[in-house]
Length: 158
Image 1 (cartoon, one colour):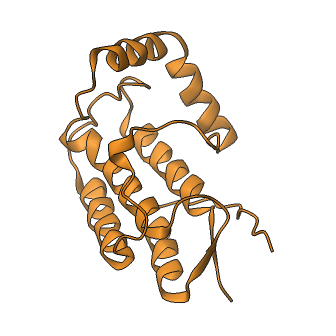
Image 2 (cartoon, rainbow, N blue to C red; image 1 turned 60 degrees about the vertical axis):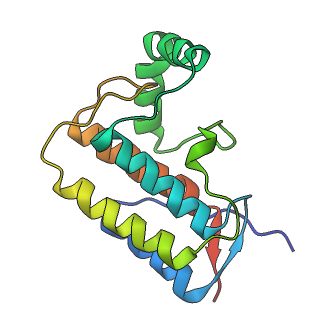
Image 3 (cartoon, rainbow, N blue to C red; image 1 turned 180 degrees about the vertical axis):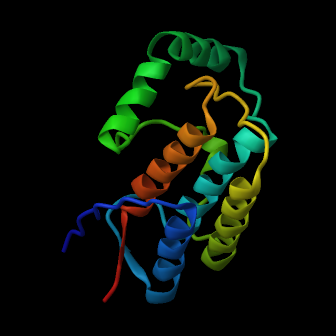
């Protein structure tokens, strides 16, 4: 039987982490391609980049990001924030997706650590290669949407 995605909205990073911890404790069914370890590892990486710096990409990717950032980046940000959603199936950096079957408990713990670090981070986020400079509020809202997007594909078992 096919499992449908959940509709999720998080007001805080703690809510997102609590959802991941609930999935770990109760088990889950997948409505998408990634498991819990992959989702949490990916989310933690994207939370970390604005604090520590984004990975350097090949020149063609940097050029593509520059073009997108300077044409549709801000419009994409406004649309995501207005609709409260992210498109399914959008490409991501391959190095931000752990291999399947990883340590789910470790990945959830890393998500909790990184979310705590993000919440305590005093400096403005480093500019996104795709969206450009974000305010602290935008940075948090994008991460909450990102968490809701990926965790919505994991449905807790009853």
